Image (cartoon, rainbow, N blue to C red):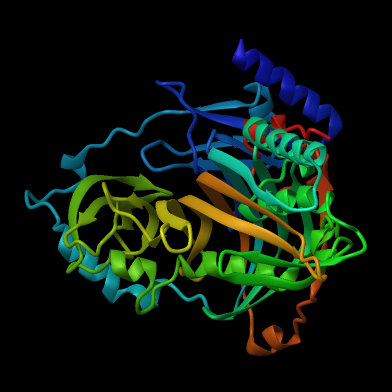
Length: 489
């Protein structure tokens, strides 16, 4: 039934935009989706299948060959015409791993020797300086509140009936938050120009944001909505001091203060998008104290060859790694090409009981934070000069949070009327960032200098996913959750 629905869905989409086709990639034996497969639409161009095995490509040329490759599976080359004949579902057969044929010698390779060769060949295999990358970036943010407690401690000069109304409003807010689907998606497509790891320029072609504006509940947003409820019951002709605990936040806050108005600007600061993109790209680079350099430190990690196979036509070692020392945090797999000793893929996540940054000032400031999720996948692809560049970057970060704050509005008058309330928020948030690089090109220093990064870029805000808004090839296929998203507006 699900496959029939999928075929009907694809056919419907094809009537909306005849330039693209959406395809699902499955394991031939298990029928499970195959994520992160490399879909080559040109010698150095293409996309990646998403977490659910879907990808979208251009259908302008029915005879254009599409090559699909993924570690552990046999490569498959098809035309768009052939893909259509398969009802947009492609199955890959598992590659038979015959180690005896791969290694004539009875002596198996040593994982530590391979890692040493990887480190020795880094400058030969990677160069991120003066590159032009066409990119597509998607960010998925979600919040799961476990506890929401609001309580008014004191409200001078507020009638009992008004106080009940405030409490009812706060209770309604709490219920709304608990019942809301607190997830939002932000996409943008553009071009990155790199000078070095610390300096890039970004040109944004298009940006969209898919969210439920009525149910946007970040921690700061929840506090703001509670403050707005309190403010509606105060004297609109007066100004107020706003304090949290021992700290004064505002000295002269008016009810029409712009800080308490919804931000409805349909634009992004490009510098903000630049910093996020640069952070992801640095995650794939090799330098002192970088993420990947630490993974390659055999003082911190233990290595073991887990498998050998072919990936994109290259004999590839699959090397598992686990922490050797307490300050090492990750476990995962490195995929290393036998001929070049380049890392072509890495999958990683926190090792058991390992955590990231954390602080506990629950008693002093009412704040606790633990970074408890850090995982991802990095995939590299070889260019025409035999250098490897990032093709796909996925980074998932998450944390537990606890915030308990007293807030007090103090009237700037001789009466100094006050409204004081406490709120407690507890829960988890998670952010998934994905970056797809569709094409790579070497540039000169003069090319980099000639580029001008603008300050702001327009963003189209959506309440439901619109497939036709990305009307060409070179984007990440959205998840089923994203396709089904509906705003409460």
